[in-house]
Length: 232
Image (cartoon, rainbow, N blue to C red; front, top):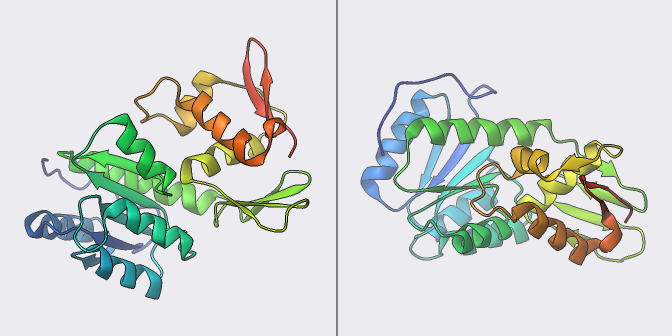
């Protein structure tokens, strides 16, 4: 990992950031750099402390290491989501396999960055997370259901309990729901939602996940072109 000069403030003034990292040298370096970049940084050195902070304070964004003591990073993300915490999460990890990334994203994280990394890339990803989180609307009517973007769930008229979505599932459904008449090619979806995904089949995989949770009609296949919002 290399340091870099500051390259612009985050999109809002003093966004509050929770950093959960047990490596003293790395956490100290990141805390200083993020503070210079305009973030109000709180630091937790293990998963239990991170869970306590995240459940008792509101944060605009979180950076969570995967290999944490007390509570492992992906398990921490799951507990935060089940506890109603909706702040966007970027997971730091030394593991770079597709399976590891999918596990972290399915747990509720929005992004995944493999160590060693460049500070510029970390800062850019944090800015993107803040923008997306700020720009998403509270709810979108899907016709027979409501997509609650902040809570990452779909409230169905026909079902007593809401359907919980992972971060990527929610982002994908939000893309289609925001442009209900548009037919997206796979490349367009990949650029907007899965730009950092290693797997060329990420789009089809997450369309399958949404159909499994919400019914086959939720995303319509347009033969020879791509996908479009269907009906729930």
